[in-house]
Amino acid sequence: MRVLVVGAGALGGYYGACLVRAGGDVTFLVRARRAEQLRRDGLRVVSPHGDFAVQPKLVLANDLKDPFDVVLVGVKAYSLDDAITQFSPAVGSNTMILPILNGLRHIDVLIAQFGTARVLGGLANVSAGLDADGRVVQFMPNQAIVFGEVKGSSSDRALALESLLRGAGIDARASEAVMHDMWEKFVQLSTLAGITCLMRASIGDILTVPNGERAIFRLFAECCAVATASGFEPRAPFVEFDRKLFTTANSPLKASMLRDIERGSITEADHILGDMANRARTLGIDTPTLDLARAHVAAYEVGRQRAAS
Image 1 (cartoon, rainbow, N blue to C red):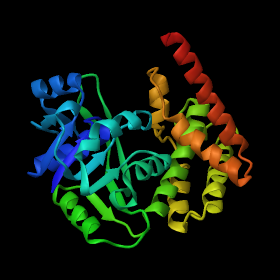
Image 2 (image 1 turned 60 degrees about the vertical axis):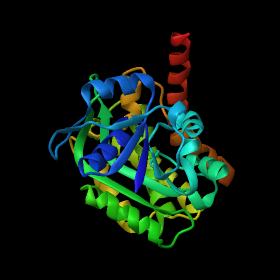
Image 3 (image 1 turned 90 degrees about the vertical axis):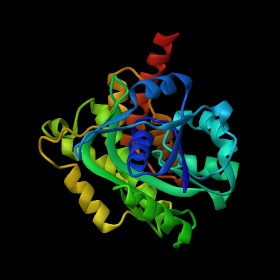
Image 4 (image 1 turned 30 degrees about the horizontal axis):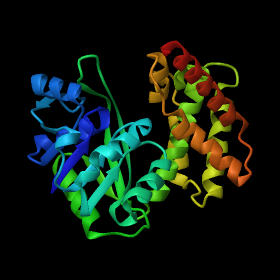
């Protein structure tokens, strides 16, 4: 399979580098500045599984002409519209578009642009970021990726993609219920981002303060209620996993959204907290903790934009 990775940031950079290392036919669609850096230094990965570097094939948007078998989209939600414009020439009649963005709203955007037949649902469970030198740094050993047909059921193309990713050492799973999987990730991320941004603290620190654990699970219950009303009630194994995740003493866990705030960057708050809150309003569900978290990050964005101007 010919794979186009859109962006060489934390997610696209990590999974794409693993595929290149395994001998995959992978090209990265990048901006000129990132291309210059990668040509000079290579694509470097710092990982609990062992550090490595590859020399990637690169393409700029103006030079993209031929269709690819797979387009792996790993950009931030606020960059999606620009990314679609850039990678559209790579989408042919048989192309699979696999987005691993956070949240859900991007699925509707991609289907509206390219049609259901070309779009897979997908999610990534990997904790990674770019450091000041442009290296992909994987913070924790997990590196799973789950994907599948938006309408459910198995397909030969999803199984072929699963085989490709597993051959690169990636913990990949083709799911027959990927939208359910994505909703559970949406609940988890909305809870984690909402509470750690609202409190400006890690899960471990929140657990040490009065009513900290209660606040976490109040927000978790609100997000679960939205998922349930949308037809995707969180399943028992997921709920049990998240209860352990959110009650681990001394946990350093915090959302990437909070890390964005800490370094003064733009966030995905509208795509995650805003979208979850909007869905709650449409369904008539009261979500006071979620609404407060959304307002908190929105106020940060107002201040950030004012300072930038």
